[in-house]
Image 1 (tube, rainbow, N blue to C red):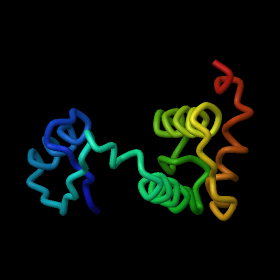
Image 2 (image 1 turned 30 degrees about the vertical axis):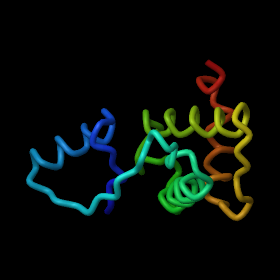
Image 3 (image 1 turned 90 degrees about the vertical axis):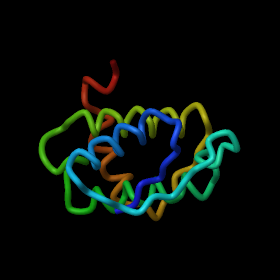
Length: 110
């Protein structure tokens, strides 16, 4: 595991706090948010490939029932592809399968 970190951002700080509380050390990679490194094509490809790998052999992202992890991923993916114009690599078959499975849920229209 590796943490993509920025010392000033709240989300990675939450992770750092929980890791420190548990006495867990993991490698970190500093990301310059002011230079928008997190918005680069490299980061997008890496994130989507990771998501595709996590979904392999699972109906839902968390491995159990439909959860907030699936809701977050669905909202993010729909926003990225619908409004921002991110194109999802067709080779990410697990991601496509998952998206086709969760998108028709009545709650996904909320």
